[in-house]
Image (cartoon, rainbow, N blue to C red; front, side, top):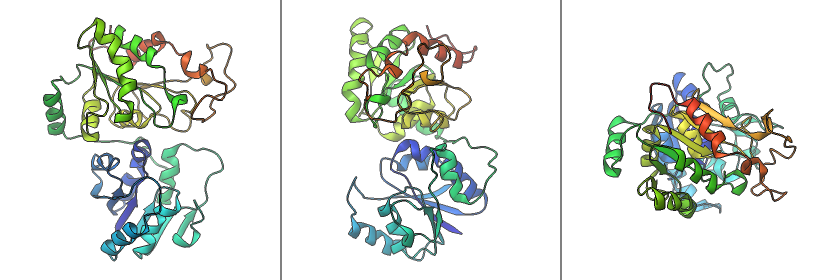
Length: 342
């Protein structure tokens, strides 16, 4: 049974589809994933995926001709297609390729494009459960996403950048969604200053300035303490750097889910979003979210708002989380036999 997986476009969502793919592979389906180039490396870190096809699609637009061209090329190769995004355009390619079974959520008025349709949940379920339901099965024994990075690739990345395995902490201070998901740069900088390990800052090119706001004041006092690699690494290199790190600190972002799937000790800071919906599924993860914090007073009644920017203008859900709070959570996540963090 050959199955085509139409992948979501965001890194975090891609990671959270791994338990679904693991279940499909376990029942004998040969998996080919169709993914956008910036997501494809995540699927190459999943051993159950036999092949990855990189789609030449850009954000926005139907790009009908490009989809039809790929559909003609793959026609007759697949028995099933699992359409993971909810958009109309994501269901077009499997339909045009005449794949007999096309499975997905109802989404954007795409009833005629899918042969097997699930109703969209009314609430916001955990994303792993949302994707895993497409298998048609329940009762998963292990719903934690898992990624595997080749040891040779890790060593090659560390050699190029002059880093030692376990000898640095990764910060991922960005969040594509918006500032209401970003712990303040000044708080990240204070945390970096208190660590006795170098800090590697990861993110996209659009987050390079943000990372420099963290690194510059620290390096002015402790030269070479922070390495701003935002926009300077490929995604495979970023995966390797996270896999070999001592620990990771991030917002609710794609790289948070990468760290969780790699089993790295981590602290995840949540603001406008909810860890009930997109938690880091990792036994070594600490989540800091003031909405569920019994100590924080007065309690927040505005989170989670799921907005890109704070509607009230104060972003207390993030500003009120201190560097000391994150440091203590980070220390608790790092095992006692490893070197201390400060």
